Length: 500
Ligand code: BES
Ligand code: ZN
Ligand code: ZN
Image 1 (cartoon, rainbow, N blue to C red):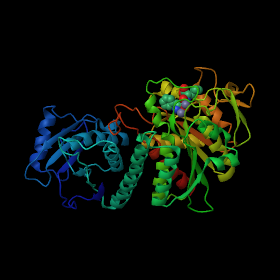
Image 2 (image 1 turned 30 degrees about the horizontal axis):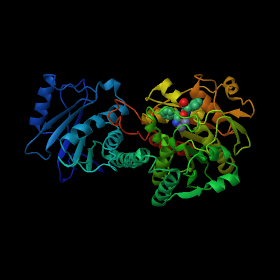
Image 3 (image 1 turned 180 degrees about the vertical axis):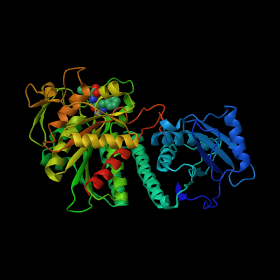
Image 4 (image 1 turned 90 degrees about the vertical axis):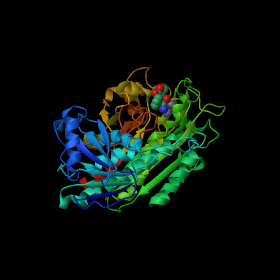
């Protein structure tokens, strides 16, 4: 999608099925506009007066026009002006997208000129995310036309001095959402196509394309390093585990941020096997990895003034004669021993080695991990937010700020020392599970905390947020969300700014 931010009168001619998008607040009787003809303006005011059009948030109304510079007008409701936030426009773009696709629109002109402060980059995000489709394994439909894509977006804004900054924000939004959609592609790849090895290969191709340092540790190297918790998870599978490392280097003198993503390409539970209902969804157990890889790709392009290292431990968790068994004891990279009383709590095992290795070798100023870690997280928060657990209030607050800006929501849960008791091992230092049905998401966080030492760290449990989200117009229930890419890129860019 090509994006051009212009001033009124500067819009240029593009070929295709064109549509003028006019945003409208509910408390308006008419649309203020910089380019509508007076007939069209009167038509919209009439529809508004008769309450055929109400401009409620998310409502859209398409009007086919003849003999104009555009073939249609789409009025997009923004609800009450006092309730407006960037997410209103992001969602409105998602709703608009459906109508634009139905009407086979390929070129959109957004008339934001009547509003001085419309965050048009949120419109770009909403369009970019809602246009996403995953068709890799579908044969093209035999009947009916191919779906259309919006190829051009022109945003008209009123202030001449704001054009360059708005263009830069829109371009950045398109880059980030492009990589979020790439992360969604990774998520949708089923486990027979996306193995730990092929995930590493995809990461390597991406790194070469955007200019990131790429390193891959194989099982032999992991064994030399003592990553026995990660190796134990992968033992049952014919697919060997992988450890993916990506580095974005800005300057040797700048601090380094660490990102870690859970890359379980399929989670059967292992010997502690899961029930078969919904089990196919466990191909999504690498959504943390996908988010971290997608964020790194965007970071490489946006070049914030800070260093970022990403670690992605990847494995397939399946039963088999070589699989780890409940009760097994493993020694992690940092020397701590873990009693694996449930092989389905595997995410924390692979993250334990990755976090400890990150702290030891990269000396990051802060670490954030993203993981589809616990079903309990969906019980607590549904699909509306990720759980945030952190040892550092400043870090947690900054992540909350980014979450509010991107509407990739987080909700913080506590890590009080009292919880540490829940994961004491009987025959080892730690146990990988706590008492059944007690604070499941917190226990996951408490376990990970044992592997980060004093480094300020935050854990995002994205079990609910990664897929299955309903009623957010720019996401689709049948697709993974790419949750975490926009959030982490925003956080990294702000960290770079805070760092001066
Ligand atoms: N990948 C799952 C968590 C999960 C479940 C994510 C459903 C999204 C949807 C994780 O590896 C797991 O199985 N966790 C266990 C932990 C338990 C054994 C302590 C769980 O949530 O049941
Ligand atoms: Zn599991
Ligand atoms: Zn899992």
